[in-house]
Every structure is written in C-alpha cells, then in structure tokens.
Amino acid sequence: MISFQTKAQFNKDAAVILLTKSQIEKKKFNFSNAKIQNAVLDLAKNKTFCGDKDSIFPLTNEKKLVLLVGVDESKDANLTSLRITIKKALSSSYLKNAKTIELIPQVNDEPSIQALIEGIMIGAYKWKKYIKADEKEIKLKQIIIATPNKPAYQKTIEICDGVNFTRDLVNDNADVITSEYFEKTIKSLIKGKKNIALKILNTKELSAQGCGLHLAVNKGSDKEPKLIIVKYAGGKKSEPYTALVGKGLTFDSGGLNLKPTGHMETMRCDMSGAAAVVGTLKNVLKLNIKKNLVFVCGMAENAIGSCSYKPGDVFVGYAGKSVEIGNTDAEGRLVLADTIAYTVKNYKPATLIDIATLTGAVAVGLGFDFSGLLSNDQKLADALLKSSQETDDRIWQLPLYVEIRDAIKSNYADLRNSSNIKGGGAITGAEFLRNFIGDTKSWAHLDIAGSAFVEGTSRMYYGYGGTGAGVRLLTHYLINN
Ligand code: BES
Ligand code: ZN
Ligand code: ZN
Image (cartoon, rainbow, N blue to C red; front, side, top):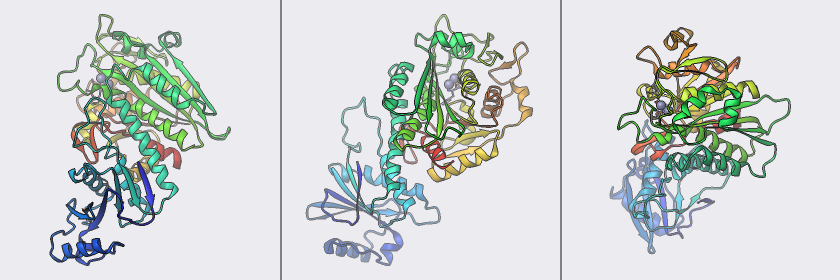
C-alpha cells in the first residue's frame, strides 16, 4: 500500500503536496514540474491558498489532480497534528477516484515520515466487513511517498500492520472472535516459526490446575474458556523472559450485575488486551525481535445463564487465594488473577506486563487518549513512558500504594473483586492484580479501557472501533529494552 520514490514525478492519478504557511509566504518551494511551480506561485501571490492548517486546495495538471494541503507549524504543531492532517487529506472527496497517489511531504526527517506512514495506515483503517463499498471511504490506495526509502520505514509499516491486525480482532462480532478463534489465529501466526511452543488450557486443564477464578467468570457461557500461552525463545538462553499478559473477555455483559444499555454495546472490545498481545506477537515474529518472551491470553466470556457466577459467592484461584464476588462485572481481574499467577509460577518471567480493558474508572480519570499505567518498578514504568512518547501510543502513570489494600478486603474471603470505596477504581483494580504477581519485581499494568475503542466517529487519527492501543507501545518497548 505504501512505497517510496526519491523525487516527485507528478505522473500518478493524484499528487498531494504538504505546505506550511511560511513556505507559502516566503515562496519556499521548488517543484520539478514548471506548470505546478507557477500555479502554486500564483496561488501564493494572490493569497488564494495560504497553507492554513488542514486547508485543502485542488489543482489540475494535465488531467491529473494536485492537492495542496496546509500543514500546521504553530507552537501547537507536532507529529500528531501531521498524522491527523494526512488522514484528513487522504479522506478528502477529491481523492475518491485516485488509485495511486504521490505524496510530496517536503520534509525528509525520519520521525516526520514515520508519522506520515502512521497517519496513512492507522488513519486510513476502516472496519468495513459489514458495509457495502461506500463512496466516502478511503479505498485501498497505492501511496507513493516522495522520499528515499529507509529500513526504519518498512519497520513502521510492519508495526502498523500489527496495529490493524489487532483492530480487526476487536471490531468483529463477539460470537465470531471467540476463544476458539483466538486459538486458530495464534496457531496460524506461529506456524512454521522457530523457537516457539504453544500451550493451551481448556476447561478440563483449567480445572485440574485450580483456576477457579477464571472458570467462575465463564460459568454463564457455553463457550470454552482458554488460557493460551506462546513461549518464544528468540533471545539467548541466559537472558530472562518478559511476559505479556492480555485480558481476553470476548464479551462482557457484566454478568448478573448486568451492564445497562449504553454500556454494553461496545463490550466485544473487552478482549482488546489479548488482541494487543496477539498483534505484538505478530510484530515480534515479523520483525524478528530477538528476545525471550511469553505471550499469554486469558480468554473467557462474561455471559448470563442459570449457571452464571453470583454476587456474594466465593471462589478460590490458582494462587490459592479466595475471592468474594462483590460484583460480577469486575470479571477481568478474576481471569487475570489466574492468568498472571499461572504465568508467574510456570514461566518465572523477570518482567510481566499485563494489558487489559479493566476499569471504566480509568477513562473517568484520563479520558480516552491515554491508557493508565501502574507499576511496582519505576524503571520499567519509565521505559514504557519513553516508548509511549516515541510511538504516540499514549499512557499516563497512576499511583500504586499499599494503604489502598483495605479497599479490597472481604469479611469472609482473602480478597474482594470490587472496592468498598467510591473513587480510584483503576488503582484498586491494579491493587487487586498485585496480589497475584508473586515475587515478580518488575510488573506493569496497562489499563486500556478508555483507549482501546472509539465509540463516536473519530478520535485523533483513529476512526470508529478498535484502536490497537498497546501494540505500538509494546513492540517499541521490546525492540528497545
Ligand atoms: N470491561 C469492563 C471495563 C470497561 C469499561 C472496558 C468501559 C471498556 C469500556 C470491566 O470488566 C468492568 O466492567 N469494570 C467495572 C468494575 C467495577 C464493577 C468494580 C467498572 O469499571 O465499572
Ligand atoms: Zn466487567
Ligand atoms: Zn470486562
């Protein structure tokens, strides 16, 4: 979909030229095509096109379209405004019928080109399995960027593919993307790859292992709960393992503490953590990242039936701790408790990062553009924050502290899955998980409940649906740490 050529040629269906206000004012542009050069000079002289942020001006040159696009250069301008600008430009109806588009960025620095690639690939993504070809959508286009190709750009393209792979998993119906589907997807990703071992625990094995919390959540469902583990020995034998653990609730109805209308419609996204783990696995294999890794997906469905687990019940999990069910809608932490405890005991990772659509509270605190980060190791937190800044996969740190433990105490079990206090739901959720990390010194929890899914029509450069939150972040973290 994206390729590169050293210089602009103006021989494709359309050319998109990015221009800033000061470039126009100072007439600082020099196009190889004289007609285009003169046309833009005229527009600049007459102030017909001033290069204002996101402004779009169409020209024709020998029956081909040339689209001038204004790029922000104010003090608010950053790489994200560039991502948004290119997404908007490519969605313009002028380009509706253009199949091959030449993009003339007029900048050649690596971060800007990478941001453009992300704006194109992540911005152009649309979930369209269930709609007829619609005129407004960005159809599959060939985009040729007029800049010398670099290996770093291929990497960005691969990573964006991983992001969109995750989004496809998130967007389809809950009854399509089941735990079985995850198993099949993972099997096809790892087929023929070296140094990889797959382990799957179904109901029978989960119950033999004592994963009573994971099983409790799935009691109302006729689908198979699954713990899916991919062990990848990509690094040296002596190097420690890092585990990535994802919450994979293929649907979260809330259980008997049923979610109300307005809160349930998007709950097929409750497997976004597991989907991000799978997208990262795809990237690791594609980019041949040489690390020792464990990819773990805790899969279940929080459905309603006569067998559903019930508020007030107590269940004992893999770690031997009993949990009072304060609320059947706080199911993710139950599945993760067993998933994390099993991973820690059996794989002994030096670092464990879990990623989960865990709490609505995280979106109350941070909104929808940031995932919550909570960690018992500031070094790990700092490394993740750095990756976040470099990838625009945004996270923000929230505190973990021992005193909050009182909030998840039970009168008749070791723990309670819901909090006795009103505020700080994202923190009490993380504190609950902390009970299951054993002596893992380096653990981080990413709460992506706000960032994983766009409910409206768009947010930044993301359209409706799954955003692939966490994939760029985790891939970057694994490459650089
Ligand atoms: N899956 C939800 C969290 C969620 C909310 C994800 C919005 C995506 C968007 C989670 O299982 C949940 O329902 N959490 C409860 C916990 C509470 C009952 C302690 C919540 O956040 O209200
Ligand atoms: Zn829930
Ligand atoms: Zn949930």
